[in-house]
Image (spheres, helix red, strand yellow):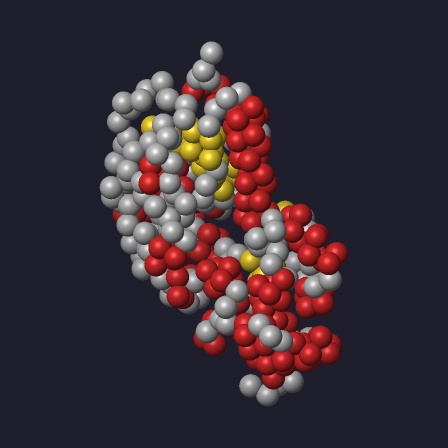
Length: 317
């Protein structure tokens, strides 16, 4: 007997997701990708990628803040560790469904945020993120295209509320953003976003380098400013990575980092380039011996960041 909607949802919850919904596939005609989404080839019509798909499984997994790491360590936002867990959980769902005869594809080229809103998981705020009770903005979303037909296949999807409906007059996140990346209407300029540049592995513009602090992945400034996150608890970081360890970036470090962040986020050149900015912002001249050899690295991002960090640590700005 073909799998039913409730069977698919049970698989998602059993994999560790806190909330799941199965929505009928249809084009998101109101979706307007920003420049970063275009670069990532995010498409508003799932059928462009999977003409066979009948539904989108949307699943959410919450997380809690990390407190600041000890001196000498980089800052990794809790989102990225939980996102990696959620990614693995959705792959587990995909394998389980496939074993039961369901065709499924866990592609990440559809706008998961928009599908999560349509599933009733939350509203988008001025910081571009979804917020939902009781998690605030602290949850990650995964999607899976399947050929399972939802029971309510003609279900009417609700309109997406505006950020004014979601946030009222509050603009705390807009004012808190250190680079002015938020436009206040739910949009973000990726060229000014710290997190976007962390993921690119390219030379970071000079005005943004000091603002990176010792962050390896994530920013969280706009989230921590949001009053909806006031009740989110803060826990010690689950994994610690020293700046010196990341500058050396041994095979052991790569395996350890890949285990908690995923292999894509543990790419050596991206990690080293970002770790060099953390070194330059650390104020620790003991790192100079690790920074200097990287000034002639073959990677433009690594070499440029190393030169910047070297002069900064020597007080030669």
